Length: 480
Ligand SMILES: [Zn+2]
Image 1 (cartoon, helix red, strand yellow):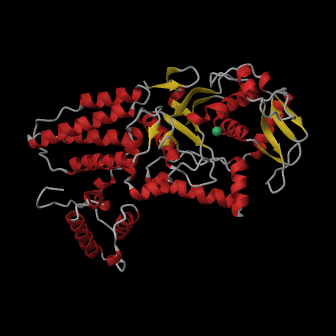
Image 2: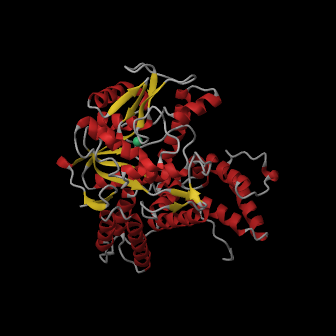
């Protein structure tokens, strides 16, 4: 059975679901800006975890929240002079389109904080009744000293945290580490009625309320990025466990590593990011997925165009192998069981996707060898399809319906050449992309010109982009 690393106990924990059912809560997006590639990394990691659990016959109830009210949301809505709902809708719909391209399974529900205000207020009320929270003039705070396990998840001691936080103490708080559950209304802020006056919820309580409401007091897997361990998840534990009296709120805490861009973590708040939709315009979504899964999910990953381009080639290699003709009748079959076993063993070992992917490519190698030796590869081929499905690869280049190049793909290739590769296409401004044959001819012409100018990076892009759309270019001389 699968073992996952639990951030709280810092140990591998075996997943043993009751009745083959399991609950998973993943902290989702704060949609004040378009999603970046780091968000997709998280989504793909938890998607593969879910796909694998489902392959093992486990029914996964998966909830992912939308933080549609917090400081950043309010600031952005105010500066852009748009309604919060509009901001949420714009960025979430773009994110959902990207997730679909990436073949990420939909969560059972994406609850929004603003739709759960009643649940949030009830939870805060109970925390006040149980003396875990206090109201100061319309602001409600959580009393961290009241919760003896505070710091257990992040491995921090309350005393040390207090020393570190004494720089700018809030006079309302009993302890500087106390955090807001309910924030009193300020001018130009949306607000809701509550027993403590008009105001809005703090970020941490939103997740506690939504997790409890949709999945109950005890969740099997609670997930999110490593940047959420402190204070967000630490505070969630304090709120939820104090509220329900149940321990632990989550059996396993799973945290993915962070995506880096250059020297720093990719982050919207620092401006160091690339939007997800831009990356998906440039690359095959399967290649981006392969990029995320080629490193272990708990390790930091550095965004690199070069690596993703390499991943595009790797995906093409799988597709080309799957398309090859072979002898169906030969009784000499390729042995695939060991590769499949290695694949499952790797995933059982804290979702070791890089090792699992290595098994796929080893089997691809065997298949290619087997075809040239006239062996029957049929079962091995099915095994590749099965393993790729668990990792969520669409392999839609393999689907004959998608093999035909269309005007949209062609337009995209031209745009990429222009904007990313800076190829001068002024000669082709009046192109009619709907005339695919003609456009294709132009593209091949552009490629030969680029090759004659020794611009191989650009000419290779055209070859690979066409390849992804089922068109293989054979060069007379095999020089690039
Ligand atoms: Zn959360």
